[in-house]
Amino acid sequence: MQTLSARWIFPIDAPPLERGTITIDADKIVAVEPNGTRTPDVDLGNAAILPGFVNAHTHLDLSGARGLLPPSPLRGRGAGGEGAEQPDFTQWLRKVIAFRRTRTPEQVQADIGAGLAECLRFGTTLIGDIAGGGASRELLANAPCRSVAFYELLGLSEERSQQSLQSERDWLAVHPFRTRCVPGRSPHAPYSVRAEVYSVLGNRWLPVATHLAETKEELALLRSHTGPFVEFLKELNVWDPSGLVADPLEVLRMLPRGIFVHCNYLDSATPFTAEQTVVVCPRTHAAFGHPRHPFPEFLKRGVRVALGTDSLASNPNLDILAEARHLRQHYPEVEPATLLRMLTLSGAEALLSAVATGSLTLGKSANLVVLPLPKDDRSDPHDLVLASTLAVSDVMFRGEWTSEPVPEFS
Image 1 (spheres, rainbow, N blue to C red):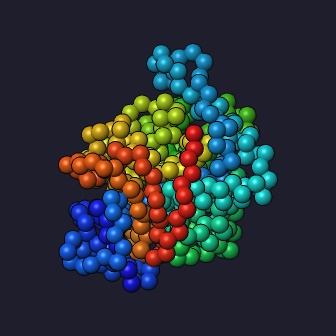
Image 2: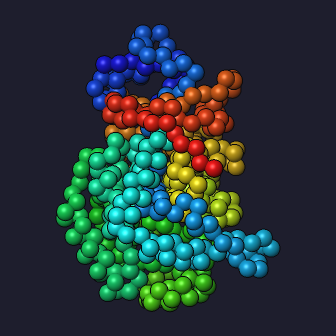
């Protein structure tokens, strides 16, 4: 048993405790108490103790693409009709596909391992990773973190979609549920997956995640079968308009417990159920020049919103805390406490792991991070975490310290 103290403890599901203590017995949290209740064994000083962070959406198998696939601007007017140029999303997808085709299975595993190590160093103790063929599952299952290994499904035609569903079933048969690594399904996106696939997967009780409403071009494809996606899909010899849903709302209806990634172009009044989650990837959103994200309006209506880094094909690193800090800078109307919940407990709820992690709560797994704090006083202690640029110094998973120095990336 050990008792830790620091300047601030953030349980997330309760108010922060100044000079509070957290007591850990083996791999479980057994007490979170105010200052003076218990004498700490270790005082971490001017630091915050928070739950281990949750990266609810990433693609570890693209970790070898760091800096190699920058989004290229459209020629002429922007994608939304404005004068400013925006990156060409389908051209970026072409580059991602070309990159994937250059990687051997051994290189893919090395990329996954490198990305996983980076996530862990930045304080992530729960990861939702999407990979072709569920390729990240074995590395995730043996890592010092919890995870959902999502098997990615593709197929717009009836034949290809049935093949994908059968391959997913075969994968599940040999990769059953594990306590620390849960299998999940990920129909890639409405422009690449037949509508019937969503219907099938929505009736099963395992985490399911899909990209949705990522670009205006996606909406044009679904609603009128026009735009650059048509040429893109024809180039790949996968064009089959009979397989398309008519609108993103169809996908929401077919996945009543789904995780919906990006949602950049959904209307702010879009209906969600209490069991659905929007995952925002702020720095990828910025890299593609998308307009203001509707997530603050979602939050006001009680929609669960979590954070993801997306991949290193669109992000400089896998620092999930940097995503929350980006939102603090660009969406100052969102309460800092809400952003910290998006970084932790909301992601754990989305990945069906909140019973074990996501908050510093009696009985949960001892998964936590130690974050040095700036030497200043703010009325809201949550802002000490988000207004700083200081990096995580220590990470604990299941009661054991696992941290290594966090690398610097230009």
